[in-house]
Amino acid sequence: MRKKIVAGNWKMNNDLAQTETLITELKAQSNPAEVEVMIAPSFTNLWQAFNSLKDDSIEVIAQNMHFAESGAYTGEISAAMLKSLGIKTVILGHSERRAYFNETDELLAKKVDAALANDMRVIFCFGEELADRKSGNEEVVVESQIKNALFHLGADAFKHIVLAYEPVWAIGTGETASPEQAQDMHAFIRKTVADTYGNDVANNVSILYGGSCKPSNAKEIFSKPDVDGGLIGGAALNAADFYAIANAF
Ligand code: PGA
Image (cartoon, rainbow, N blue to C red; front, side, top):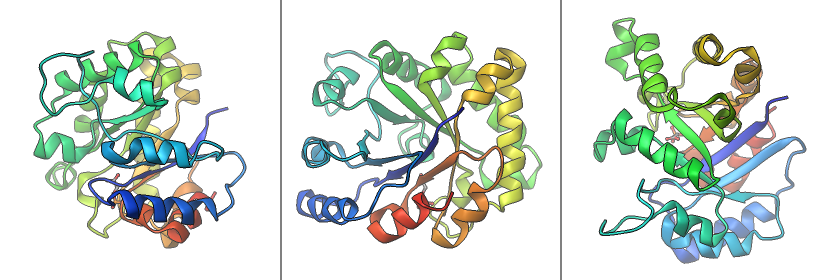
């Protein structure tokens, strides 16, 4: 059975004091059974967040990492550094990393390899832009993003991969993919995985939806058979909204 996951991507929000406050509010909520709840604060607040949530079931995860183990990469953070804090999961390939930091499929393949080599789990993000969808190319784009960054992996590696479909036109825009659009794409993604790795692998990989997911639409999106949870941006910055989403299954 694949896992249900709701992960909050805090992006470049919350300083140390704000992180503490939001975590206190999150801890006051009760965790839904059978849903893995995660938060991704910024690097500078990971250690604080990790320690504050040591005895809680919320997992603290990272938003990004570098592919190299160590070395002359000023300003970067390695998988080994994250691991040394106790972080076990990393988000890779977010569309903001692709758009603003020129992250390519080729670079992301290296990051995925580095994360897996360090026994970390990867939440791998991908999704088409508005122009792709308007021209009917959304499946072609999504397929190539997944294949280029992940399909060099062996089948076993998919135990440590979570897929996150995030149509770029829906991120932070208030515009959400309809539950049907999300389901159609998730089914396509699962079929793409199945065609190469077989039904077992495909049926066990969790596929999250991301893009303006909020309490008012989460229930309907999560009710779709191939949607296994969400990657939440804006709504993850409010404890009540985030938990309303986590409880939407
Ligand atoms: P959003 O962001 O929920 O604010 O649209 C989602 C994401 O970027 O993961």
